Length: 125
Image 1 (tube, helix red, strand yellow):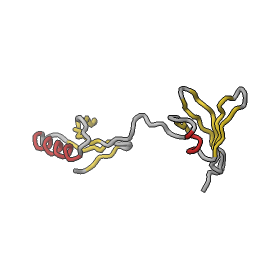
Image 2 (spheres, rainbow, N blue to C red; image 1 turned 135 degrees about the horizontal axis):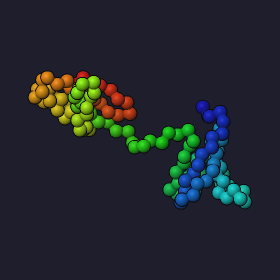
Image 3 (cartoon, rainbow, N blue to C red; image 1 turned 135 degrees about the vertical axis):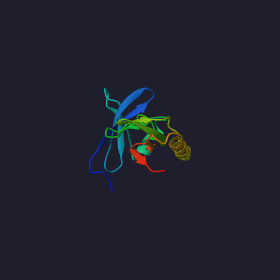
Image 4 (cartoon, helix red, strand yellow; image 1 turned 90 degrees about the vertical axis):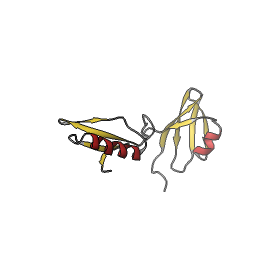
């Protein structure tokens, strides 16, 4: 299924930003020199990028991630109405072991295991 409308994009190439569009047919064009009306046209975005080595494409509705998705686990303990985090780890089993050790050493405190990623969930070990 092809998209119903033409989508605009920005081509980043050698420090320049070039305006472009992708048509529902898959064909694309980029305005290389808008002052003189020079453009590059191709049958697909992949074919277009062959002529712009190292270029990247920016789509307007594309979210930009502050950092790549990451998974981590951490133990938190409760102080009053606030949960305070302990240093996170990427190893879930290490966090589970840390939780068990803390519960054993401090039976009067409330601890929990938290999985940190694009969402925030409390997990049972």
